[in-house]
Image 1: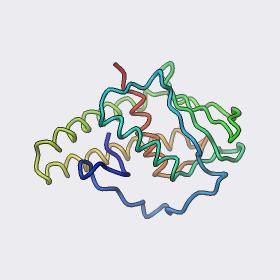
Image 2: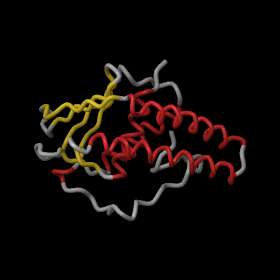
Image 3: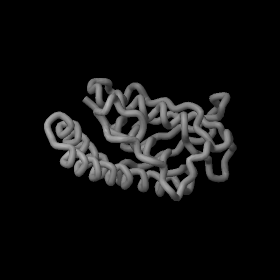
Image 4: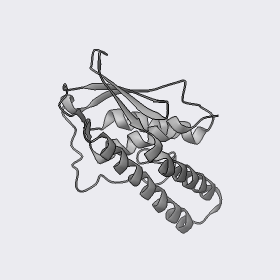
Length: 183
């Protein structure tokens, strides 16, 4: 699942610039995610491309993010992401690892986007090996569009519980996709 960030020696798309409508300035500590973990029972590690994207998303998310609970305690926050009973489970903890809130989002709304995103990522990886730069660029534009669609949906679904910026939503959506990969 290619995404914005550090790509391996030219094998991925170039990093995307920050959106003009959102400043790239660092968030204050009370509006930041300090640590993210994934449910290791859900995550499979088979594909090196997926593992790379998972590692990049986790690193970039902790390095640069904006996250704050709506009407909740200030951060920094620790997030644990899992999929259980067809829901995305986001356990939000404080800096001392004490539970603050559990956010459950039904995954049904994400099913089509995630499925389409997986398909276009497979096409993208295949294109890198055998297609022209213009063909790769066309596939990558479609991939980024689906990634943005998934990110917007995630922001909408979280809006009454947490405030996140576009870049944070994109990285979280990448991790949601990683959690969907099963044997």
